[in-house]
Image 1: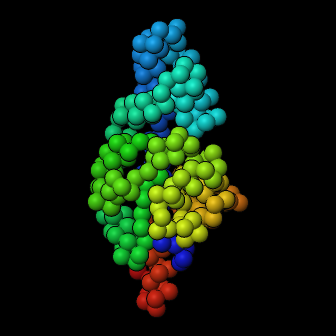
Image 2: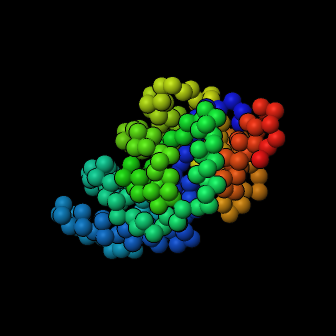
Image 3: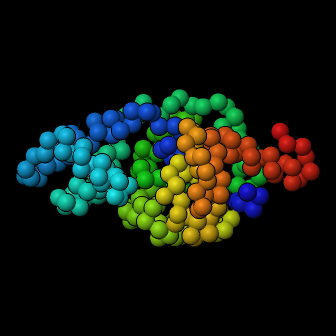
Length: 240
């Protein structure tokens, strides 16, 4: 990872570990949102179990629990995207991690590496989550990119969302960038466009490394420390 000058971070599940009951929390947000929108638009109601079932299928097929409903009922995806994220409880984000997390980001910035967020959530949610993680100073609003950047194209859709991202990062090229995710399928397009790729595997679920993934780390701190150690070693200084 010596030749990178940009780290592109996914947010949820990557910058922090998601709770084990995340599916239940998602359902609690999705069900009332869809029930209300169906009622307001005059569509027949759906039982909560049906909404949950359709939301699960939507996630498996598209990467979003709400996208099916936008396409099926003609709801504006921007509105659903914003409402879903705005109603997600901030309690799912843990308290700020150990100080080394922030310190390591600052250290890599001093080494010439820029950091940005590229999330399927929206910018408002990202800002709240980063504040909870005490990382607001490290990621200004201009360094947060979401589905509006890609016009609704998800990271697993191929190279198009990454091409859209780099149109906003004109100082950088994919070949000198690292994409960090918790979901391997979201790294396929990143690898195809020329980025290096890394997985944050909090639970050590990966017994082997997928072909399109270059690195696996158990925490973001471990990834950042690897970069710092490599840079210091490369400069002739002892690793810390």
